[in-house]
Every structure is written in C-alpha cells, then in structure tokens.
Image 1 (cartoon, one colour):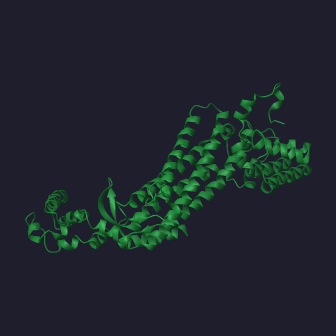
Image 2 (spheres, rainbow, N blue to C red):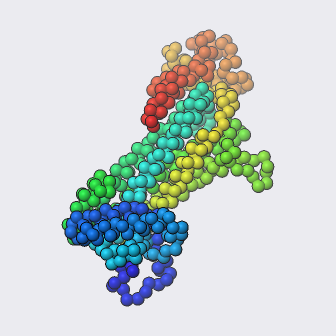
Image 3 (spheres, rainbow, N blue to C red):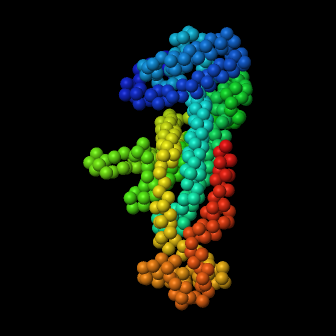
Length: 457
C-alpha cells in the first residue's frame, strides 16, 4: 500500500513510477529510518496515541525488518517500494498486521525523511572525522620518519626557499585540521530534530518532541515546522565542507604527482597505489592520486547542483529535495574513498632525501638569505633586494652559484659584504634563521610536530 494513495483512482504511469522512486538509493537509510521509527513509536505510546502493547508490537516488527535486512541475502534487492519509508511500513504490516499502520500517526514523510537523513549524516560525519584523523596521522608519520629532509619550497611552481619536508607536510595537517573543525560545526547544526514538524504545520498529537530528541541523541529540536521539513542547508554545508576537503586532497595529490616524476624525483609511489601502461612497459603511473584529483570535481559538481536545486524553492517541502540524497551519498562515498587512498599513499611512499636536498641547494634559493644578511647590516631591505637581484644576475652570467662568487666580487656590489656572508648562504643557516613561530626552523618544526601529535591523541 502506498503512503499517499487514497485520493487517487488510477494507477501511476510506469515510467513516472520509476522516475519518482528513490528506494534504489535511499535504502541505505534503513537503519536511520528504523531508529527514528522506534523512538516515534515510544513517543506515540507516551502521548496515549497508541497503546503500550501496540508500541511493543511495532518495536518487535521494526527490529525484525532490521534483522532481515542484515541477515537475509538479497532481502532489499527484491523490493520494489517507492522509498525506504514505505518499504519499512509495508514490511512492518506484513510482520505484525494492522497495528503497523499506526506507526505513521502524527508524522509525515517530510519530517521523517529529514530526521532519517540527519541521523544518517550525524554518524557519517563522525566516521569521516576518524578518516581525516587517520590521514593526519599518516602525515605526521611521514614527517617524523623524514624529520631532517629538506625540500625546495615553491611559489608559482618555481623554486623559492628551502623548507623542511616535515614543515611542508604539516601545512596539509593544518588544512585538514580546519576541515575537521568545519565538519564539527556542521554536525552541531545537523543535530537538531525535525520529527514532530509533520508535513508542514506540526503534529496534532501531544508528542513530547524534546523527549524524542533526547531519546535519539539530538541536542535540540527544530523550532519552526516549515523550516524543519524544507531545510537542506545542512546537506549543502556538508557537501561544501567535503568539497574543501577534496580541494586539500587534490592539492596534495597534485604535489605528489609532480614530485614523483623523473624530472623532480623527490618521491616514489608504492607499487600498491600505482598502475602501469598497456603499451609502455617502463611506466609507473600515479593513478591513485590522479583519481583523487579528478574526483574532487565530482564533489564540486554536487555542491553546485544542490545550490541550484534549492535556489528558488517556495516553502515548504517540494519533491525537488529528493535530489539531495544521491548527491549527499555520493559525496560521502567519494570523500571516504579518497581519504583512505591518500592515507595509504602517504604510508607507503618512498622519500628521496638526497635528491630533494640537492634541489633545495641549487637554483639560488638562498638569495633571500643574502638580502636578509644585508638588511641585518643596516641596508634598507628594498635596496638589499634590488642589489641581490643584480648579484644573482651576475652569478647566472658567470655560471656559478652564489657560494662560489668571491668576496672581492661581492664587495664590488657593496662594501657591507664580509666573510660571514658565506655562512648566511648555507642551507642549514637558511633553515635555522626562520625561527619565528610558524617558520621552518628545525626547533619550530619539532614543536609543531609535537603539538600535532597531541592534538590528534
């Protein structure tokens, strides 16, 4: 029996019925739907809308549906219900009889589906949070194992200044830290109970919504029935926050793709997360990282799509909102898989420390340190910057690095240069000098690593 069929005389068109059905994807809400329904049955009994015996019957029937879904192979695959809500009700009635029809007293699919989605999403946010933490652990493990490794830092994809590899990896730790904060903020807004809002105007039965909220672990109740059934901000926020996580994953993937090329040679991916070529036997392709990079666009599309769906919907519920499920489910699945794969990449990558250090020691990455040297000796930094630019140009013309320019040659540019300039040009000095909070000096990075470890513990 349909949840809405009484007013209709004819049968739905077969193509429309398929078009209208959401069971193929919202079936994953079965645990959430039954969890919410168990609480609703108790609330109905507390309100005197059904007897305690009927509530017990309903609870037993709902648990039997859940058991069948978990233990009977193909149980859900054989169903042709319109959606998960009508499926659960029809199965409940088949198990306990007419009493099953009383479960829907005082609620609508509108507040039911929003409740189900929030219960589901609350748990998924907690699961995703654990996956992000595991990725942060993988970053820390790689940083710890390569604490002395140096890598060229880049701006505009041009070598800029040397940094510790651990400092580079902790930059991503910070990004994922902000991602976790966003997920936590969204969870708090998700954790408000819509049940009891009915279809639009609220429920006509004396259901204690605050009690139901406590029973289901919600922090509170949605305060306006119109808003409760038509709000999908939390879905849009969730997809948007997921899109930002995918931005960070994609940037890290792009770095590792570049760094693992023969031209850079800083990293080598494990065979377990790479593929070969069907034609060229020498190839080792970073498909795992390229897929993460590509799947980011998929999540971005879901975010834009949900904004477009909700853009001009009149209050309150509209069937357009059914489109939120596939976008949300696919976003969560895509993000989960990407987090797991990236953590695997990090735990199995080989770092080519000598190649990185060599690259960080070439290409005039110490030019800024030379300008800082002049500034410490009293020259205005803007003049020092311009003068060192001329020194670099001279050095390039000579085909020699800054370390090989003689003191006499340096003094032809400025009498402020002295023997100690060569110490300023050393890689170790360059790193150690960046000792302000947040810098790449070894002691600052050690502190940052210790702080990162304590944060995720």
